[in-house]
Image (cartoon, rainbow over all chains, first blue to last red; front, side, top):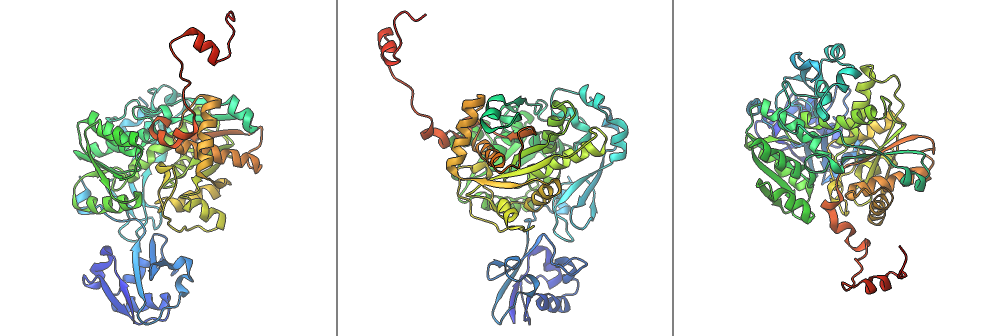
Length: 98
Length: 419
């Protein structure tokens, strides 16, 4: 099991949970397993070719997986993975329509 | 004014990554894929109304290009920004081996002496159109100065957020306008993260957060002006200093818009990016052939460029690649050399970012990227009086004498009857 930190905009998919667990041997299988638990999560994180979206960063123990092996980056039990939008959000669409 | 004020030139916002469309509100991130949003224009209507003549008949400011800027009504902020001199740099050109070198001199932009007066003019006009009465920004200094000044003139509430270690003149250049100046313990990237959180809580127009899609468009006017000032010609090269990478991206966009709209016949400009070695995530990615970058902790005297996690880094890399340009870096010593060389050859005192641009310009000539006969434009984006600390130890001291003619002539080895 790896621990995955979920950013605020994706928490509606995880029932509000900021940290979830997933069985996974690499980042790819982690995403598949998260998508089984929380349907719809994959399309937010990956584009229609299955590649990780350009403005989504995934960190394994603080290191950007783009500088490791991308989706093939191996994971082991106890690893901590963070999903972080590259551009910090902020504008609430409901508040921003001034 | 040009004639499109009645036409609906803004279609809305669109995600640059997944293409999802949004209305033209204050929003900067796609809620589907987290990509940045950009203004989408109705180019067909713009093309029908816009010509070299309508532009030339416009005001002597960046608002002569209002048809290509994302506001709906008349401009209400920064009415005198832009249209800064394009200086033919004979002396510096001779020194570097360039016959046709020009400097786009935004050290004299109105009213706060940097290119940020362009983006803020657009951002504040748009913020008022969207009904905001409070304006804010995350800044490395120049943006804060410009937001504070324009907010004072527009009678808007203002919060500017800056890192705690800025140059004295940049701090004072906020305080004098009486905004709320918030000095954050941390670097620009910390300030920016904080501002994103604040923007989610308070209904303010953060020019470079929730107003960013509009704000960033103001930078296109640098490209428009260069083309017009060269007699409706795009240069062979433009050298652009990079912090977030937005300026370079928008300069390239501006050139392409002019080309698509038929205002120039030919576009073969190469756009080159310049960074300080102590904060060069975009140039490092360029050198490694990556289209993604590794955020860094900035350590350079070029504080206005000290963004370790550049929001438009990817697009700057893409624009440089599309145009066939290059990127390079300079050390802090080379930045100071660039600043003093520019001052001593052309009489222009630029801030540290100008030193970065001149330093990289020099390198690109040495590397053979810029040829002697190429028309080359370097963007000088900010004023040296704001970063005096950087050159304080490199410019010598005045020569002190007593108030005596004899002392003067003796000190300077001048004869008695030389006149």
